[in-house]
Image 1 (cartoon, rainbow, N blue to C red):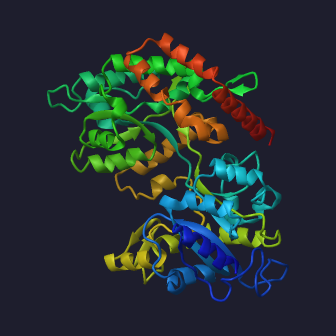
Image 2 (spheres, rainbow, N blue to C red):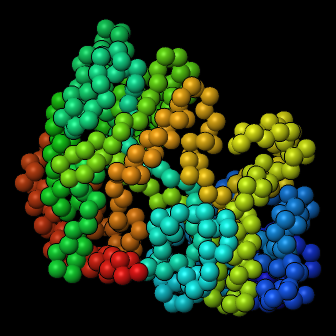
Image 3 (cartoon, rainbow, N blue to C red):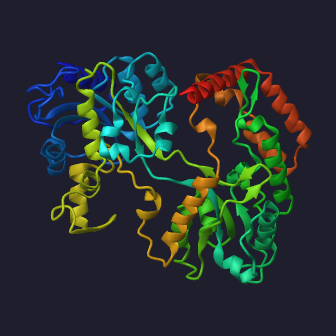
Length: 508
């Protein structure tokens, strides 16, 4: 039977961990249901759904006997057959299932812009959900239009995005250092540079040593102020963001910062853990990061320095825009293969809509009250170690079988910050950046050539950027490199594909 065929195919490849739950409907054929489950008028029977889902950690020990998964089916009126695949192998498995034409009824995709997935969409492998009334599902309707737009492929909706809330990248800085040095929040790029220099030169930690730095990382949030994210075109080509004069202005600014010694000399080889260590040890005053990070770093640094606190700067206006960069607002999406009968699609959408409720999100995240936890206040749970262990056994550690409820400030509120005023300041910062900071158009555009050839064609790009910032080469050499890349036939094909995608997205 069809489900067994998928299991045999994947087991032969030794890549898929297969588990199932759901009574007597595990062997349903594609697009069919027993007991009249096609979503026809008056039909109230459970809908059989076979799905391909990922798991971040430990998979469920026994889905068929899990009280959590039984409750999920009861609340959503479904019989579920779930193929659980470790996240480390997920994209590979999805590609194999698509290639074998063995897609189940519902598929989760982590990388919604992956070339193989887009190719399958272009070949008609998935339903265009734009043809269905998505506004009739109350929880899906809560997802902002911005997130739906960001998740579109070729200007159409092929998947239901799993929202993670509004967010952006910005600059977090040591608020206590600003106060110690008598500095106001910078409102211009010149004032921002002066602040970084003061963090380096004026002993903000008061230990009498010149051992602090103004900036760690690459200052990516600066690009918006120079207009780097504004689309730029030459004929039928869309220039890659680093090919513009605006990016050269960003390089020039960073080159000036490096010359003033506000950054570690080896900044370009620092790993994320190195940067975290510098920040947590009180050795750096500013970092370009997602806005919620200011809260998380404040909690961490106060373990060693109780008076220390990070805060987000408001977007700083530059010559062609504001600092910061908007996030897409979702992570992964759910797609319905085109072999599923159209009459069943609304029932699957109904399942996704129900899982996007507060109740189902809490069920799959925390379990059942009185069994897997004692009490729940917002997103803060009280549970014993034994209860958490049981929940992990029954639900798995991060098994993705539901749609996130849209919580606009989820990245902030899920932390339950208890430091006075911290959560409010982070939320206010998100609002400011969503209003003023630009989005990167390449986050929503697709070029198959770019994905396939980036590593070999642009093998020298990072090195050229670093050498330009550190002053190892003159900016004239950067200009030469850009012109060479613009003349490369493979790069020209990339730019042409991006331009076609940009035109498609704007037409729709």
